[in-house]
Image 1: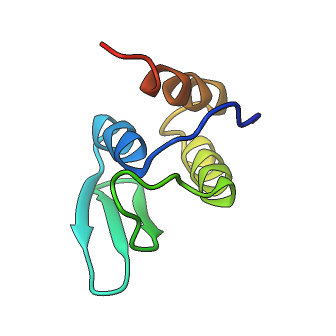
Image 2: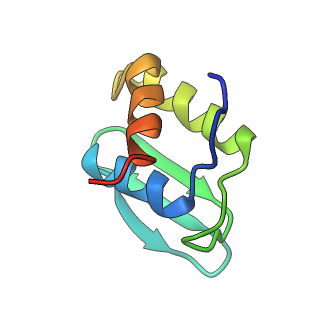
Length: 85
């Protein structure tokens, strides 16, 4: 995974929601739950805030190991998130 652009939390949220994750906001974290594939926890990012590289790497690996999305497909989704519709 090579970071070539900034991924905002709103970008990441959109990707996770397309994969079936539902966001819940806790007092100290943002929680994404999937009925079959577990939870992902993030600090309280603002929507326009860049996601830290270590969070992207962890999310990519978690989703790949769980069989939710292949690591290369996740990278492609991040790249598509930057392109206007």
